[in-house]
Amino acid sequence: MEKQDLLVCACNNVEPQLIISYSTDDDCKEVYCSVHLKPECNIFKRIWHAVKYVFGHRSRYGDFDEFIFKPEDAEKLQDAANYLKQI
Image 1 (tube, rainbow, N blue to C red):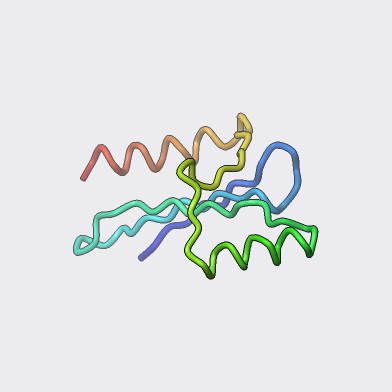
Image 2: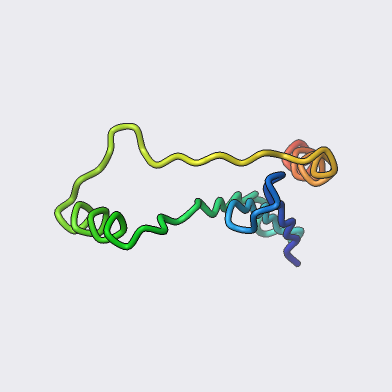
C-alpha cells in the first residue's frame, strides 16, 4: 500500500506542489518527494528554453523555484520523517 500527501504552497496557487509518497509495504522502504515547479508562461521564453535544452545547455546552478509550507502541513511532514526513522 502506498501513502501520498499533497502539499500546496501557502500562496494558494496550485502550480507549486509537493507530493510526498511512501510505501507501507515491507518490500519497499523508500520515501519519494516530487516537486512541481512553476512553468514558464511566456511562449517565447518556453521556446528559448526548449532550444537550449535540445542543444544540451544545463545551468550550473540548476532549476529553482520556491515552496512556502503552511503550518497545517507540519503533520504530513512529521509523518514522513517518522516513517524514515522507523526504516
